Length: 373
Ligand code: ADP
Image: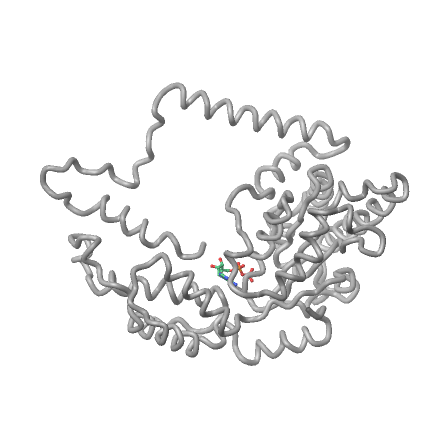
């Protein structure tokens, strides 16, 4: 995700297409799937799949009243495994990281300390321009807090799962509680909790929205009830709704109030851009001096994290692009380093995706409705 693959891709491409030097056996084409070594490997893989299926089956059967088919779908499509993101993978955003640590990570890791007045929030909103790292942050929070991570985009509730969305929402919260501590990450939350089509809002979207709000409220009362009954065991059942949006002003007022914490994720500042460029280029042979980095940081004011990734990816293609078809015959060691010039070329057409006017809308909203810190 951070641009690492470029050099490996180059290697694959070369071995798949270039003429190998004499006397060495040609490497296998990169696009051919490696065959398993033998029957034993086959069996081990099958056993793994079988035991995973059996675990899922057991889990589903242990939740009374859950829709089994939907539960399976949730475990397969919505629970995210692997692809870990850690704090250090995310450039900058220190105040957002600190706020997420305090609101989510520490309470999940040390539930015994966060009771009563320190009871953690059950909802947090990350808002800001697109491509600023909201999804990365959510993933990092799940990883760092050792939580089960459920990731769903709100628009898929109203499209892909339409017809079953209400049941899906119910099953989602049931599984999240069973696999707690859990984080339910809802991207594009505005399309679920939006107010813009109040009049035109159709019956089914309204029902999905209500179900979501009901389930979400039940989380806090379940936790509170449990705490009263058992003294301290609410901590075992922590589930947090972490939502992201590029359109915070579209969320209706009642829903907005339920997000006690509303964290602004702004465009990266210069120091953050520098760290991100350095990270991206650390995987690449380049000739950029610290003055060149300085220059890059200066000219990318207004670029989002994903704009910077696109720019670096495009610039990294510079040395290959100029080779044309010769690329197929050139040795990897002969490819020249990426230069500031490559960036200058790419800057011609990789432009910031957020306009100045757009940015001030976010800042305004942050001023009125954002949580400080
Ligand atoms: P959002 O959810 O805010 O739209 P993402 O988290 O999906 O943005 O980021 C999109 C891509 O941009 C990431 O995969 C990553 O490559 C890059 N990116 C954005 N912000 C950062 C950051 N702060 N540090 C490193 N990479 C970032």
